[in-house]
Length: 375
Image (cartoon, rainbow, N blue to C red; front, side, top):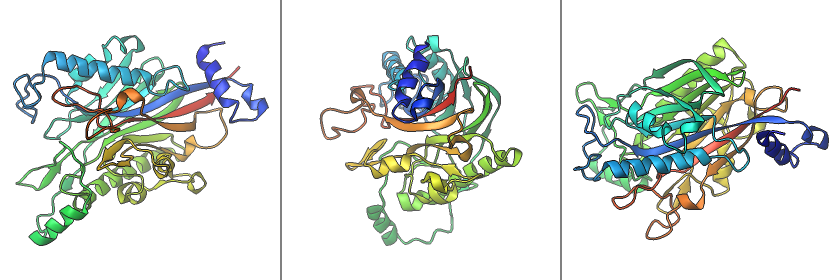
């Protein structure tokens, strides 16, 4: 018996009836990871990457860049392998400078034999950080892909007093981030990442993936919330357009949303449901809310955990008819080697510093999709 199917069969024994447990299932892992500042060492005059050069503030040398790639490749090759020995079939990524860094990443010895393809577009983000989709070519065949811009504008009529602004700064839970919004002073447009839509065939089934990196909390959670609510609304429009073509479309949206499962951008603008019994045709389900309620997280700030990294999917992935791909379970990839062990940030994700390349300030998230293997 193929080891991939055997291990999944064993795992299912505790979930399904004895009769169903004797059946074999195909499993695929879908993952998302914020790569945190995956920059090359070359200064690009069109973006704000000056610190990510050998003479820049980060002292970003070729050796450090290769170490970063090796660290990321280790994580990507291991996500979800606790219950599925196959590395992820699909990986959404964020904080990517350009296509070349992805080409370098998938050629890393830990990934090269997995034969990942790349879907990537440059975004208008002034730091030059983009989103992308990596896919294993033997499992997924893209049919179409495009970037969809998020058009948001700073409110130039903001009448908030300086005293109120200072009060908001104290009240707001602002994320510590390099991800500061860039504004076009002539139009007041806030430049941020596009949303990436990729539709293709995953082991015989059409699935659409949306990869996101929503606007940051720079300036404060409350003040920046409308930008993320706009991102959630755009996500909803993309999903609804897919439902118009096929009401039973299999759609999955993933990313660093810079908001929790409970925030308006996710609950209201995107409309993500957190209980399976609430989910009907045209709805989307968020399996990460339960994890947050159980104290888990993908990012830490001021000793509090939150889940900014989420994978949310359409109703068609729910149910018990395993003749097509269905959701099995979700997870956060937070192995001990990804965790800071000393200092003020002990217990936090082991991120980049001037003395260590680290991995990321986020943990990766993943879900398993399963389908009964036809005889």
